[in-house]
Amino acid sequence: MISKADKNKERLVRHKRVRRKISGTNERPRLCIYKSLSQIYAQIIDDAKGVTLVSASTLDADVKKLISGKNKSEQARIVGETIAKKALKKKINEVVFDRGGYIYIGRVQALADGARAAGLKF
Image (cartoon, rainbow, N blue to C red; front, side, top):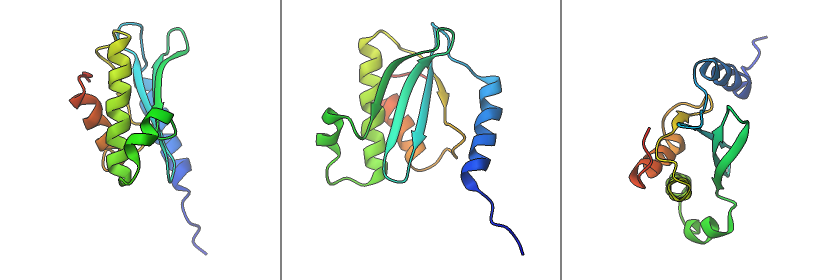
């Protein structure tokens, strides 16, 4: 019998491969995303210090008001705009984009487009 591939296990392998090449620094931290079936999360991380500088998700109170009645891609775009605004307030202009092993399409692309539209460079 053919066994079904575990997609999350394959995603984690891709994520580890990407993480070997990129890391966040103080000058250019890492914008890391995670998506579940119903939510999307984004963090800006300084890997040199090992701290999260800024975070946003669809579960945040201020974001929840904006996303009611929207589809998942529109919600991801709003999360991207929110994290970019928070980052710019902390004087973070440039980041390294870590797509977390996900394919750059759909919600991942919408989040990146929203962050770019709000002024974050990557």
